[in-house]
Image (spheres, rainbow, N blue to C red):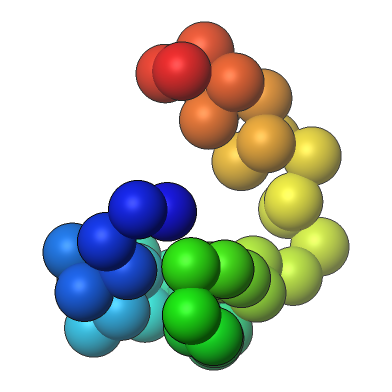
Amino acid sequence: MRDASRVDAAGLRAAGAFGVMISGRVVQVVVGPHVDLIATDLDELM
């Protein structure tokens, strides 16, 4: 991400993410066993 400060980590956790890790411009969202469904949804949004 260009601006990782725009990531709503609390919102992602509230939506079901197990964790959010931000390091510089890299953001990782831990979503667990439903990752395939979520990845498909994200692909459609982009």
